[in-house]
Length: 138
Image (cartoon, rainbow, N blue to C red; front, side, top):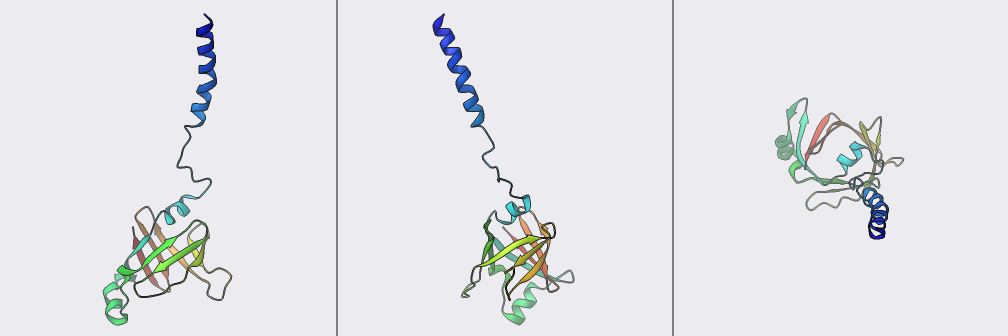
């Protein structure tokens, strides 16, 4: 009889420990869904639009800028890194404003600028800057 009592007692002690350890391991510790989406990996340039028209090829032809070679990676610590072949692009800072509809780059510096987010989901980031919509994919 004592063996059964001891076994039940141990079982009662161990079960709460197992239940506590079964929490959600993907918890973002209060990070907003938009920050999670933006910082989930590298964004690859896809297209540039102006007035609803794809001007990616036109910009490549006129300026030699190939949007499909452009990369951007946002970090949760408020930094980002852009890359383009044969270009040195320093790391910078970013933050959301206006209910996470605006991304402010280089806040508080002479180089500060912002973009208006038009789409942000798991597979696509689009933002408008100076009348152009820049589209990125994963």
